[in-house]
Image 1 (spheres, rainbow, N blue to C red):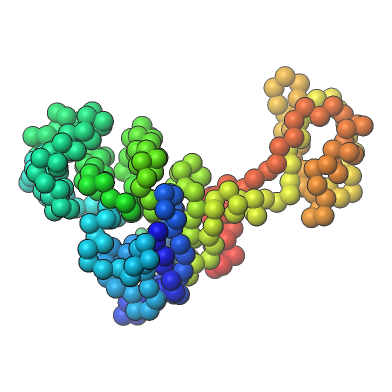
Image 2: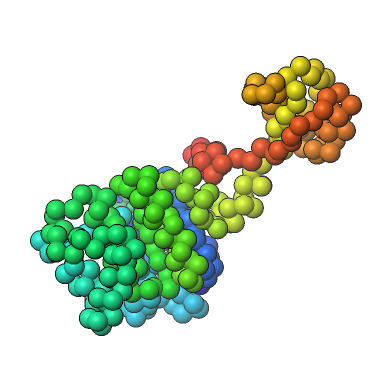
Length: 301
Ligand SMILES: Nc1ncnc2c1ncn2[C@@H]1O[C@H](COP(=O)(O)OP(=O)(O)OP(=O)(O)O)[C@@H](O)[C@H]1O
């Protein structure tokens, strides 16, 4: 749906994006990841035509970006901006109509969102009376109310308590189910694992890693296994393996973390262990997105 091709952007003394390319597929949730200052917001601003790239192209459904694409995009910027003196209702109506909705359509859709978020009583409140999290909720609604095909969320969870974070995650998943494509930038790697289908990791202006979350996690898997056996079992590990951790568990069990040489598999390990102890469980050690982020960014720096 969205293709970023060889995009570069230079600010006065700084190259904010250096030859960045990736694709966002229709109907997926895509994570745009990277450390502070990597260039994520710059790229998001390019997609929203707030600024233009110096080199490269961005296409939406095969068309070079053009002004009327804006109505197909919902954008939640990193720096939130609501008009403090307006009432909540007026604010929502104004922003929805700015995105091309008629007055009646805007009112109907906004009311639906207010019911869903159980905030009907906010309609006549002044925006300046809202807490940070309440204002975030409101701005989320104004981002998606016109049912954009592409939703771009810059740090959508910042400022939310765990209950509202989970509410917003649920809404993002629901919007995906209804056919929207969602790109989100976040430093919350747990959320990336929970909801993102694929991602691009930007570091120092360049894309350094990307792909489907599940595939990349598998690529980074260290060929290590957690094996659960009874606490009293004593085993001799084969020479192609190394014990990296041992933990006591409840119910008279222990968990061994065993790393294998590259050319060996779980089958090889089990063949050696089964004659020595009853194997209660065996599970692959898979790195988290947090582990992968830190490993790749540190290696790259
Ligand atoms: N308008 C600007 N003029 C000059 N430099 C800028 C401008 N906007 C951003 N930069 C620089 O470009 C680099 C990338 O900034 P950007 O805001 O895109 O990073 P980011 O990945 O979104 O970071 P964060 O996670 O901290 O929000 C930074 O070094 C920043 O100082």
